[in-house]
Length: 219
Image (spheres, rainbow, N blue to C red):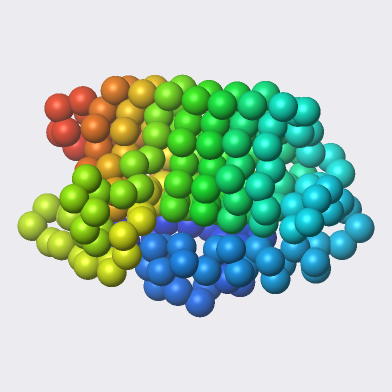
């Protein structure tokens, strides 16, 4: 449940070779910036360097009011909509949506990820076809500013890092206005109810309900 292999199909990101170096996805957070800086100049003629260290695919649509901070990569057929704020260290894959007033910081978005309305995603990795409902956010720093621990029932895994938002596996659905607390991990094909406050590990093929109850999907 914890590993990159458990959560992600690496055929759907330019960060595949980078991620293969690690066992746990949070281990990759510290090097996202350097990975983008190394990858950007190799992308070829289908990408334009629209500003220093800002690489945008020619088929991507970036609205005039959006801000792209360096370094970042915006993939094919992706839309970066009005007033989106890409603070930097963001690798956004193909066919993604970065919506109005969404903010990205130190993230990897696999292909077909949607953060379409008023989302904050920081220090996180969002898997293939994952979707964040309107107003859902990642909280990436604990209130006491201590190092993040991943909780899975009685098991606790020390990450050794202070900033860690959420790891969403492939095909994860996050409901509107949900808050993913530091160190949240959501397994493949799982759903989170709207307005939930989520903490810890949600296994694959499950549903997190508002009460914090986790049930397996049927069928």
